Length: 79
Image (cartoon, rainbow, N blue to C red; front, side):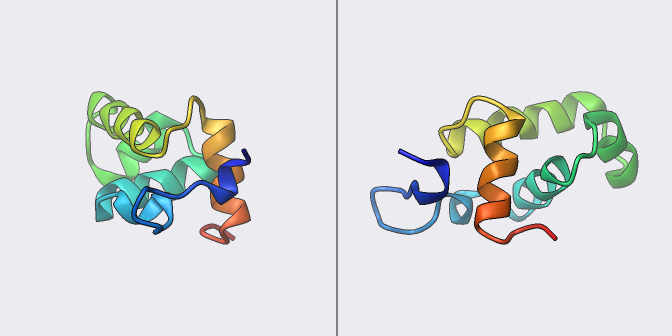
């Protein structure tokens, strides 16, 4: 099953289960920014961004940034 077609049991896209901050971090990861760059831009710690990344991957049933990036591109969530 391709990541771009994954949906929750309620039929809504996976990214709709993310908080606003998680969605923002997901888009930044998908656009190629490092955890350190994201942390600096959002004035948060690297550990906090790493925690967001872990939660995002868990909520989206993904294993890595490549899957996350593919999903965001397929769903037109990044430019």
